[in-house]
Length: 371
Length: 263
View 1 (cartoon, chains in turn cyan, orange):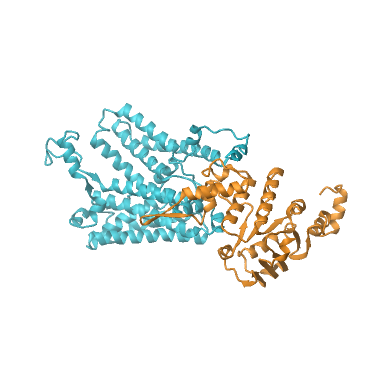
View 2: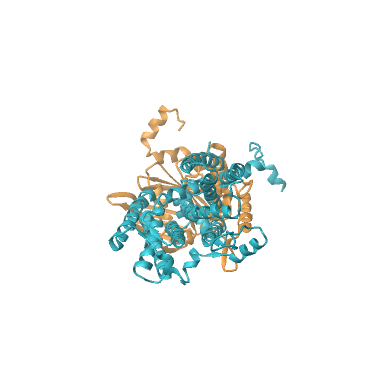
């Protein structure tokens, strides 16, 4: 290709491989992940944070963040926000509890019905946003209050309290409940314990059993959602439409991308993720509380922004968001292991959010060649 | 002119468009033949934008008819017009800067490869075609992954034009493609127009710059206050006459006098 070589613009500097590697959405999150792990290995390495139990502990917390971050990430890339995620988590959990415990319907019916209701509310969010052209910030802020209000109102009206327990009892023998609240690979940990790689309980009812008795389905859901969303976003036609819808809706419309459908579907996906989170939580705790999920929408958005997504849409990465969630989980639990006051976690959130946004703005300038 | 041997691809006859009490277009007739560049000139507010939006299916005409290859057409949406073979490249809305050239090029028509039950974008094919089409237009991309935001304004227009040509446009409507560009970039876009015309595609070139129009136009139609003031062929009209027609004549002569004839 000699003609190609001749045509290379002499004013464009050779970009180094390093610089090109820097220009990717996940960069900040990758650096952050390494830094956070290095920090806690140094300061909390001998506190039990990195033995089997400790790893399971922060992995579970990270997985929770991850599930809602995946939904928020896809939606943000499509150019919209959902501030009702936290309220949706409370609402979904309460819905499962009321249907299964109060109405005495089978748990699997409660779960499926709740998913249907939540996804329908997600669709409603999306339809209102695309039909009215209002910012999704305002529309979903309204739903933040509407859903939270109902979550407190219904259990008080029906049961005269705001925490409903007893879900573990009605879930016994249900076929769908273990998909959210169960654990898998229990045999693997028994085997690892036999090899001496995992500690065993020395006393109590479970003496002799491994301290980690399986991987919670919560973690499996998180990893599966990340994998599916990543492939969908980067490898498929629909993923290209998600980028296009958030990058410039008008330009996308002109070439025939069904922008409104894409956005509504992403609102539904976010609601689905919130519902997965809620179901796992309810199955784990055996109860639903009206205050569950408070502030989760902001934690999801922060994880997504740390992961390199732009608040303005059209750019971001699911892997980045997942790493952002991992950073959250590790820091939140790591501060506990390191014996640091846990309220400092919020300080950390604010500081890292600020750094992430500044870094993202810089990266975007490089990508788009703005000066 | 060889293009006059052909019948028009698109003929717009007596188009009127009313927005409530406002008459934006009041009887505009215009046609494009294969392989010609037909320039549509007019000052701001003359009705150029409304007219091309009617042609590309965004607006439905209040009166008048659109003939596409001799047959009467009613475009219900831009998608309909696009499928018939009318592609429009809008000045600012052609590309999404944060997305790669390949992703922009194929946006809405991504090529897919089936793997089991799933369809994935065939990026190898998409990248190869994008590089090849851009090379034909005289642009050597560093990489098909580079974001459109790193390209110059002229190059972005060229990607949009290459995209339209690749997807089989018979008529290409260019909405002021040169108005925001520098001298060198303008020359590149004009030469792209020339290349595309030679492949037999009919081009509608909207501009208010007479010199850009003269450089590539085969015919010139001037729009003023929602009406066509007439169509002239290349060589039958001088730039000064075009300029006068666009501005509505008299006042311009006085203005030009005070500006020493440089406008």
